[in-house]
Amino acid sequence: MTMPDGILCAKTHEWILEEDNKATIGLTDYAIEQLGDIVFIELPEVGASYAKEEVFATIESVKAASEIYMPVSGKIIEVNEKLTNSPELLNEDAFENWLVKIECDNFQQDSQGLLEYNDYKDEVQ
Amino acid sequence: MEENKKTALYDEHIKLKAKMVPFEGWLMPVQYEGIIKEHNATRNHAGLFDVSHMGEIYIKGRESFNFLQSIVPQDLTSLAKGAAIYCQLPDKEGGLIDDLIIYNSKGIIDEIDYFAVINASRIKEDIEFIKKEALNFDVEIINKSDDFSMLALQGPKAKDIIEKLGVIKSAQPKFFTFIKTTLDNIPVLLTRTGYTGEDGFEIIFENKYASDLWNKILSYKEYNVTPVGLGARDTLRLEAGLPLYGHELNEYTTPLESSLGFFIPKDKKEDYNGKKIILAQKLKQMPLRRKLFAFVMQEKQIARNGYEVYIKGKKAGIVTSGAPSPTLGKNIGFCMIEYNLLEAETIEKLNNPQESIGMDIQVMVRNKLYNAQIVKKPFVKKNYIK
Image 1 (tube, rainbow over the protein chains, first blue to last red):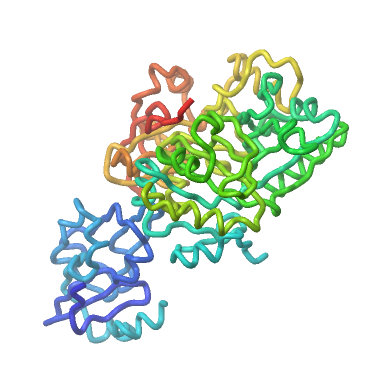
Image 2 (image 1 turned 30 degrees about the vertical axis):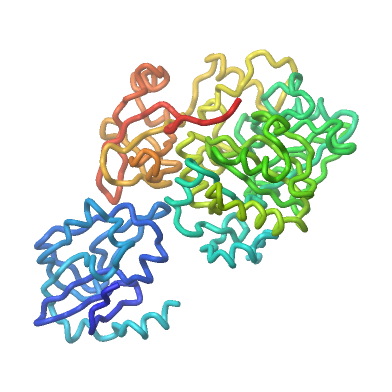
C-alpha cells in the first residue's frame, strides 16, 4: 500500500490529495475492504463539473452498487481508464489506483471538514 | 425492532473474521475472505455454509399424507421413505407463501412422518398458514426451527469429505434422498440436496454439535474446503437458475408464472390450494399474468434487484435478482415481465420458448437503458450426481 502523505478523507470514504489547486481523488482502503471484490466502476467524463458531495461515480462489488461523492467541488481533468477494464485493481491498492483528477473550484473552503487519514479511520471504524 | 438472532455458529464466524450482516432477522456471514473466492471454491472444491437460519417443521399423525397432499401441487404418492421432493406452498389463489423441500421420514425419524425445510424469512408465515390448514386433519405440526442447526457442504469434493467423516460413498444418500447417520460420531440427518447447482449435502443436527462439526469439516484442508457466506450462496444459486423466495417467488406469483411449471404434475388426483388456477395455467387453459425470465446483460453494467426492465422501449417489468456471474464472467439475472404492460404479439413471443430465448430486452441502470438478452436457465450447467 502506497498511501501518499497529506491526503484528506471524507466520511463517505473518498480520499483527496491536492497540489497547486489540482487534486487526485480515490476511495479509501477501508471502503474497498468493506465492499469486497470490486467488479465494476463507472467513472465520469473528462470536462464534467461536480459540486462538493455530488455523486460523480458508481462502484459495484459482487453484492451491491455504491455511489462515490465529490469531496470538494471541481472539474474532471483526467479519469483512470485502467480501472474501467480492471476494476479489481482497486482491491490490490486503493491509493495507487486513483479514480479521477480534478481542477478544484475552491479547495481551501471545500476541504473544511475533511479529515486526516488517521482521524478518518477513527471515525469510521 | 427485534434484535437479530444468532446461529449456534456465530462465534465461529467471528473467529474466521466473517463480515456479519442482518438477514431476515438473523445475523449471518455475508462473506469470509471474498465472495468470488468462496464462489469458485464451491464450484471447484468444496464450500461449507451455515444455513441454520432455515426453518424445519415436523409433520406427524394419521392424516399426514392427506394433509400434505392438500397443501402442495406436487404428488407425494410416489415419495418413498427416505426421499425428498422440491415443493411449493400456494395459497387459495395459487400465489406462493413459500417454497420448501419435503422429506418422507417414516421409519427414519421416530414417530415423525414427514419433515420440511422452509425459508428463514417465511418461518412465521408458513407455520401460521400450515397450522391453520391442518385444523381439518388429524395431524400435528411441530416447529423445530430453533432446535436444529444446518450446514450445507457443496461442491465436487463434498462426497470425499463426507466419506472422511464416516459415511463411505456407497452408503451416502443419492440425489434428493436422505439418511439418518452419524458424522464423526455426531447424530445427523444427511440429505443429498443443496442450493448451488453442485453435488453436495445438507446436514441437520442438534445445535450443541454445531461448532464441533463445523470445525471438523474445515480441518480437511486437503480438500480445500472453504467457509462460504450468503454472498456466494446467492451468486451460486443464481447461476444454477434456482429461485429465491421474496425475489423470484412471492404471494402474487403462481408456480407457472415463476417458471416452475416443470415441477407441477398434470395428473395429481387430490385437490390442493390453488389447484384450479395452477393446473389451468399448466394446461395453458388460463393465461399467465406475468412470467419470470433469465437474462444475460450484453454490456458491463450489472442489473440489480428492483431495476426496471424494458421491451422495445416500453416498461415491461423488473429485475428480481441480478449479479455478476463469477463462473461466466458475465452479468446475469432474473426478471419478472408483467404481461399487462405488453401487447398480445409480444406476450405470444415470450410464451414461445423458441422465440423468447434470445429476445432482446433492456435494463435501466442509473437512468440509462442497457441491452440484455433472454436466455434459457440455468446459466451454468448443474453438476448433480444422480
